[in-house]
Image (cartoon, rainbow, N blue to C red; front, side, top):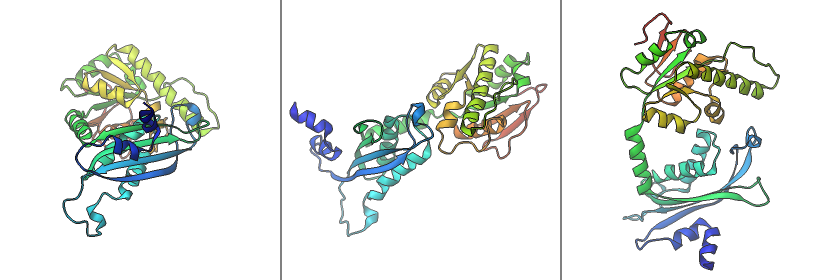
Length: 308
């Protein structure tokens, strides 16, 4: 028991040795790599950075031929730090667990990597280090990647103007958008009521995003099939199960490290950014204006038109 407790708090390198199988494996490690990161689920953790410490151990397949002092024949330390940096830049996350999963998966895509231990700790959130540690194998990652590849949907995104939301043909348009079985996500802009105006840019952004979400609930009240959805996990489930989603943008927009350049009030451009993020097959704008530089095929429709 004492040995198990010691290993629970030991460096990942010791954990790797203690859980090794009979087949010999080499290991490379990264110790006490500290980065300033914006991460966390609490409001106090938004808009500010905190120190995060990374410890990573990678078990690699021994080379069958001499290294000959050639860096191209090994899994270098740079690939580990690059994996961390790439995930920190890809999106803002709430959970260390999610960040650890993403880093482990990226490392295990390297040809030599067989198993990886990832420990991540927050250094500034309490009297001690608060963290998580995960262990992942190449087989686990390959199975998960194969499953995602076969199930990756490409939805149809339909932006509805406020006039379109209140149009009596709304349910008919939803029927038309679903005729070919494509997953359907509806986007809207802010409602027409007056919004509070403040000098703080980030606060105003939240107010504007919430106005869009309020309008999404108005849309959902007009057709029982439409469900307001806020997270990528919810969207993925909805697309796989035939649910019509109304995008509530706050979480995805605020969590993006490379967020939309357009303000929330430019609702069509926001919908175009979102369509690109989820690799939509097309963006259909009903009763609105064409966003510039849409990253997916764009279709403009007036409320009097048949959509498809």
